[in-house]
Length: 444
Ligand code: NDP
Image (cartoon, rainbow, N blue to C red; front, side):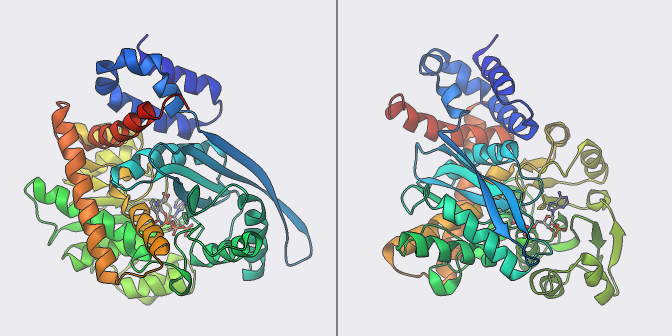
């Protein structure tokens, strides 16, 4: 059995009931096969892959808090500090009922390569809880966040582990967590990113993931002879990533015709009205039915269906495993040119392979959505300098980072004989830097 297969089998045996983690490891190891086989003896002797797939540290803790009725609630919480070979652990905190250790490990594992691809000195980590902020009062969210940080503060710091937002963790949650960290530790430092602008946040961080997705997509299209201007784009999700992806796509001259949430989706052939979408989702925190009710050109549908709309570019921006094989077939049948992942692992392995086999340009999340973490790293730099850069300065650095990422993965794919396979390119480029650093630092 090859080294790659041995390690994958070990992951499945040692981490039962964590299918998303298995999926993420499989996808990465498969595309690294050619690199691993070329260095198999040295990597195997150092157990490099075994160390890479095993988190340096996994924290599991309970979070007790009191709800508005005086009832005590208990949630499970996690922080997985996966790999610090190239910098302090960096990765978001997900608050969603679906969160479990396997989900956090898949996200933390992906984060290692994503962070490496940004070219910035940040290691990989991820955390979260099965707490659901939806439908909770501000006081309940604060009670949860304070209790969560009362435990988490022991393990994080500006030079050790710097969490950020993710699904369910927005500006409100980061604010409550930051306040509690400062109160307990007594230091004013950049321990979290995604902070409010009045207390150390970076301009353009809110927009960064969605904007970065479009900068990379634009470059990928350009290098393959297409212009994003005039393209029809379908987007899933209607959260942070989806909203700013929609905004930047429209600024670049494309027309976005769909968005979705966990209950339904909207088709708006006139093009999504971003101001209205922001009002419904960011201000009212309401369902998409309210968007459709306020916009005569929009049709609301229950369930899933975004990928059935004819488009040139598809941008999945909601959650993992939301673009399945039948969706990939529909996209290909409708002549879709490119898919770029705004969410983490939204496309199943089967669907990814189908899209690639049918000539669709495919940018994986660890490259395409790296703008968020890259701008978080820029927030860390500003906090260390005690300076704030302008929106234009951050945005222009973000754009350069995304263009560089695309060329890194394009070059890596070409170098290893897989031209146009950006999944392999991203995994190889991300891996090589981390593997070099791990080798240089000895067996730790
Ligand atoms: P938000 O919580 O702001 O939005 C998530 C969106 O996806 C919402 O529209 C939500 O619908 C929908 N959604 C969530 N879970 C499901 C589900 N199980 N089925 C269908 N729809 C669902 O999150 P973000 O926009 O921040 O994150 C979206 C994705 O992007 C995630 O995969 C995240 O890990 C990834 N990402 C985010 C970054 C960031 O900077 N924010 C950086 C890099 C990656 P509803 O409102 O109904 O819940």
